[in-house]
Length: 272
Image (cartoon, rainbow, N blue to C red; front, top):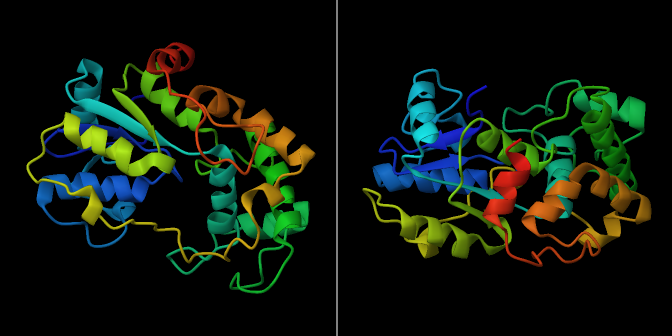
């Protein structure tokens, strides 16, 4: 199985397990900069050199050896499940992707047909009932995760604990898991713990939000999208994420964590 979704600097100063929709573009660019003193020109997900990635055949043996021996500091980053699934909806379902097309080709037509979702027309810019469509998307996301129908779950809305857990189950261990909601604090602690060829000043690092502008703007506060049924569905899909990463299931309006992440607990519960 190995370590899918794992990135490592070329100097092997640090190892990162990517969790989609959790500041991964910014983290990847910081890693790239820490080796090269410049940012990758474009979306870091498209970089085929300058950063080791499990998806690159030549990187696999290096990442595998490093992670199995825990030679480098390893970390990941998580996000409130309510805001993460909302972000996935607006970016991946309503938005036009950077290739100028809809995400995954026939996915959106399938959702329109089978779940009655609206996405704001051809370009995602028309007015539509965001709350109604989002709640229908949530049913679809649950169906993909629970029953793998009408398709397998997508990495952008599958549970964070699944992404985080493959790294542990296959022999890796984390030194740090931090929250996007406290990004500078968490990333700052990672940078303090490692030696990099280039110094990174977090205050000067731009946010590389590659999904921004893909889709319509969220028209309502987060909590308006989640009624009792939606909260039940979210809990069914993400109960481990709430529990392990200490987010507040009871209050969708509270995006901040309500406790400290216990790394021993995460390793114990996700390592089987």
